[in-house]
Length: 119
Image (cartoon, rainbow, N blue to C red; front, side):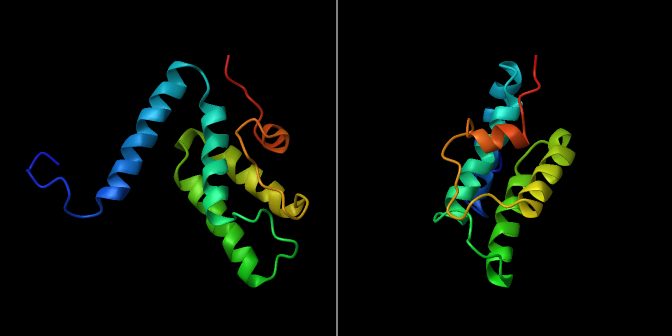
């Protein structure tokens, strides 16, 4: 971006990465990284599954859920890879009620899947 062409390529993706990087820096400073990781899922869930958890996981719905979980994993710090993978597997193995969607990173189910561990 120092070459004088900041809007060439996928500027939206670069901007999202920069915003997430800033949020991560702030979360690390405030010892709230786990909460940020849950917040990323809330955002991805809102975009990818706006009607909430599907009543049935047919192939199309399973793909939608997998996409949300994959994006969540992609946008979380590497140090959380294992925890995010286990949380996603838990959601698939023990699905929440149909229509469930987390509205905040403090959602009770999300806090069960990814409890705060920072001190």
